[in-house]
Length: 71
Image 1: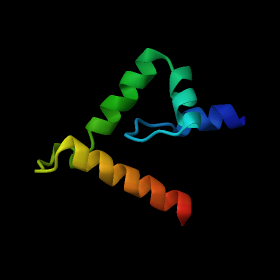
Image 2: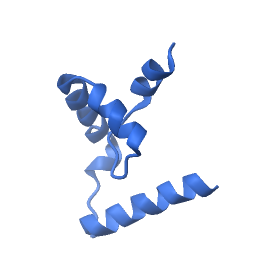
Image 3: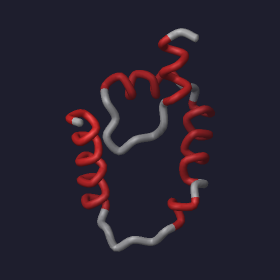
Image 4: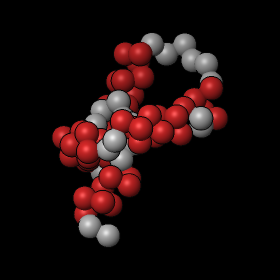
């Protein structure tokens, strides 16, 4: 499997995508992008209510990305 095909197979929606992830996402068809969003939102933890604001969620996502990059 080529690197591009492998990259496309793994790409999922993200609050903090890298440039490579943005490029890979753009290469997907619109139908495939919608299918991947539907798969993501069908996960059980997407049905949990939270008092977090969108800014809280984005900050937490950015913190996780930073941790992955540094350790």
